[in-house]
Length: 124
Ligand code: FES
View: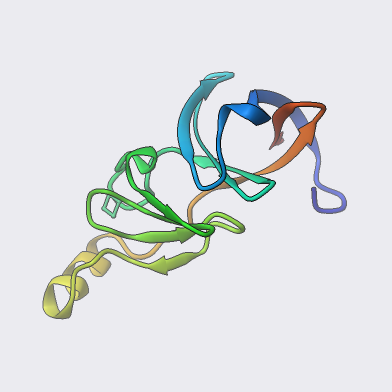
């Protein structure tokens, strides 16, 4: 957690053994729809829905820490939610799509392993 960030809630999302290296899954917990991914011994938690047009990221692909949306293939880095690629459109189609809904970061959550559980902290 970054220094000074207020934490209002912690949510247990799954066990460390529930995912293998390179796997991701959708988890509904605490009223949130999360995407949970494991890369090596690190776990990442983000919103399950793509910030473009709400594609289900858990149905996409994971390469390293980059998740690719199954709908229009936007890519996000799970370490910070940054946009690696905004859709797979090009040329005029990309210009129009970006004008309608420009690149937006994926919401990611502070995540830690407590015992054998993966826990996310929700900011206030
Ligand atoms: S909904 Fe994810 S890239 Fe369009």
